[in-house]
Length: 430
Image (cartoon, rainbow, N blue to C red; front, side, top):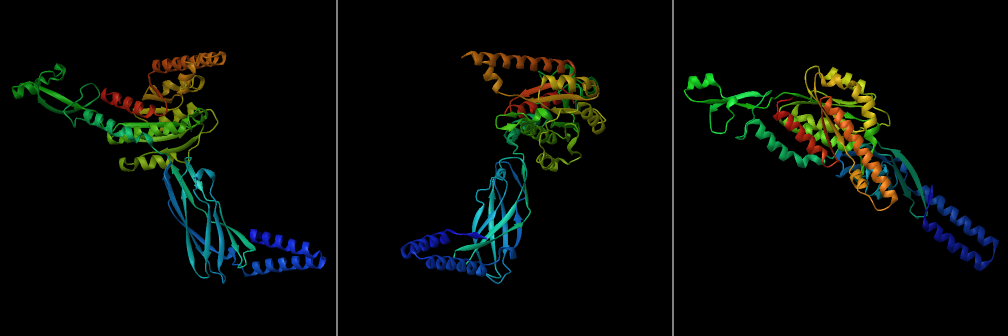
């Protein structure tokens, strides 16, 4: 039961009447009148518990975009339900308006639309629907709550998509669909053509030249159908925030750009998300379905405050990639975590695979390192410079172990990782 402001106004008027008469009988009469009016209003109000609900609408939306969920409310009862409806969602669902006025005559239905703009990635589940039905006098209301489940999944936004056209143009150059053709070890033979000034003499095919009575050169194209395994670390270092989002979100953006590019290049792309246990996996998805499968797998992932078990990661990589592959480790370039966890198991990966480590850098370090205004700034600059030196040291150790290291802030990392992939493909190292 709920009381309205109209009842409070009537009670105030009744108080004035009692004050003017100064009689206890007047007080009792006013109280009895108010109680009777409230009881009558409650009896005549429609029953919110008799309402029937169903939902329809969007089940997935990219982070930052809007989704609409429709709530269908049916009134099978014998009285009209008039009042307010509250469709409750968690704050991160970004609901523009949770409260709605409803007026549902007996035997009819009404639609209520809720607009969501999620502010965090993952599943956003509807809470209860609460209806407050006001009586015909507007003095009191009956209230009831219903569980009407619905889930909207906020997908990774893939902001790095804007870098895809330029990288695809470079891929077409490497792939021989423009006049520029790649030559070098580890590439596939494409065709023979006549020699033109400027061609590498090492590409001359002397046997074909003898048969054709002209100098012929071989042209090459990058190898296709390579295997790319993306490892998304979801441990402690992935939970660190860089700007307004955790490192994990920036790593996902880089993984999506790399996957889109590699799929267009004809390579097979798989993904695992791992900390101490396997959190998600995408394997064997067709090129046309790859991005959809990846965003579905990434959407509910959250970083865990645990140290990643790199030995288990290496075992999972060996199980899923028995042949030579490009293994991309998306993790923070954290000296202590990598020195104790990754470096001891690194030979197990580099002995068979080409390994790339891509780390999300914090641009605040550059600003801190330049501080000289006061003593606190100088100490902050010293700490930032020490951190940068430690990162440079662990990056050098990884490179000595045969790992390509790519680092950049959340905006720079996706295109840099894509460029590293193209460079490896051009060099025939995949």
